[in-house]
Structure formats: C-alpha cells, structure tokens
Image (cartoon, rainbow, N blue to C red; front, side, top):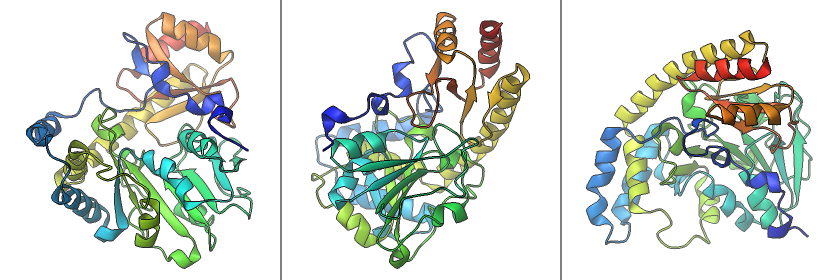
Length: 346
C-alpha cells in the first residue's frame, strides 16, 4: 500500500529548491520575475473585494474567457488553483492504475502515490519521443506532458491521441503549450468523443504571466468528467484574484501578447541551444521554454555554477533521467550561463 510516507523523495523536488536568493535563476520555469503592469493594476483593483467570497459572476467571467480562448463551451471549463490542482483531484475518480509517461513533471507521481493509487512509469528513451510508447493496457489513467517538462519535447496530437482507450482517462499537461508559437499540437481546442476515452487538458497561466505566487490555471474536458473531478472540492475553490487573472490572461489582447512573446522566446531558445552545443554540450532537441542537456559530473557542475552565482535545475530527480542531466530555463541572460558552464567544464 502506498501513502504519504512512501512518496519518492525526488517527486517532491522542484526547481525553486535550487534558486537561492541572489542567484541568477535558470532553475525555475516562470518566464518573468513579476506580472506585467497591466495585469498587476487589474489585480490591485480587486483588492477592495477581498472582504467578500468569490462571486458567481467572477467565476462566470473567468470561465467565459477561457471558453472563448479555446472555442469551447462554458461547461467544458474548470478553473483551478494552479494547473497542478487537477492532479490532486484525480484520486477522486478512483483510478485503478495510473501510467505516467516519463521523464515528466513529478507532481502527478507525488499526489497519486500519496493517495494510494498504483503507478507505473512508462519511461521513454532519448530523444524522448512518444511514438511506440508501451502503456499498460490495464492503465485507466494516463498522464503525459506536452511539451514535456523536463525534456522540452513536443509530441504530435496523433501520438497523444493514440493513447486513448474506452474507459481510460488521458490527462494532457499543457502547462507550457502557450510558449510554442501557434500551439500546433495543443488539444485545448479539440472536442473529443468521451466514448473513445476521456481527455482532460490542463493549462497553466503562472509560467507566462509571472503568477506562481497566486496559482492560476484551468482544465478543459467533457462536462460530465469535470463534474466528477470537482465533486469533492471545497466551496469557493478558486480565489477572487485568481479568477480575475484567468479572465484577464485569456482576453484576446493578452492572448495576442503571449503569442508574440512565444515567437521571441522560440528564437531565444534556438540561440541558447546553439550556444550550449557550441561548447560541446549534448542538448536534447525540443521546443519548450527550457533546455535539457547532459554534462559529465552534473552535481559538480551545479555546485560550481552556484558558486559563480547561477542556479540550474538538477535532472536526476526525474524518473528516466540519469545524474548527467541538467535543465536550464530560457532567459535573455543565457550567454552568462554558457560562459560560466564553459569555464566549469574546462
């Protein structure tokens, strides 16, 4: 029997553990240090409303904005306190066996294991493509990231949908999808027949808009599935400021800004990956706003980089990665990382 005391230690490790104050942070995947001014002002305007419980009108505004953003109906949208909240809700569906595509974000593993859900990891070999992945047929819950954290790999819709089975719930974590120009492989706007297997798409707004401290996200799926998922939630599960942020960040002008930033980010990633390759580092091909790569003696490299004022994410806490892997967030300051890394490797 699994439980809280048997959760794998690495499943609870996240990049913020490496980002000590004063270090240049390449460990955490939030793409801006603070929300943009227009969003901060909009949230500040709602501070006077914190004496009241979140209203039905607040929830409706958030849901309507998400529905319009993805071409969905309102009953296909569930606001969340961060996309990761959905993983905490999954045990309420009583899954018999969860298959986790690995390497991947570790919070599903931690929360499902703590709830006693049997887990099998489906470990992908480098370069971590999904085609041909052997998911156990008995798995009635499958979790996959797209693009995947930490590999940065974006899977095709076809490869993801090939995992569907009647009676199986496929959870697609698209926390970083809005960092991919055009989001060509996203399933967020896809209406799918639940008879072929339910699909739950999770989206985060914390990474793009600098809202990690607020926890903002949402789920998209069949109305009956969302009703079951939310059945045991507390009343007022998403706070007023988070609902306001959802409505604001899914408005057309915000979506357009995010799309423009995604294009710039993609170019920055290309430059950063080339810089790392240029000093002899083996980079995993990907599209996400972070880069996974390998070095010899990664622990020594991490420690030396920290001594030089740079935080980077270790890779060995992810199932399927060895102690040679490191992950670095795409930042304009990437030349500083490459320079420091080259010096350490010398």
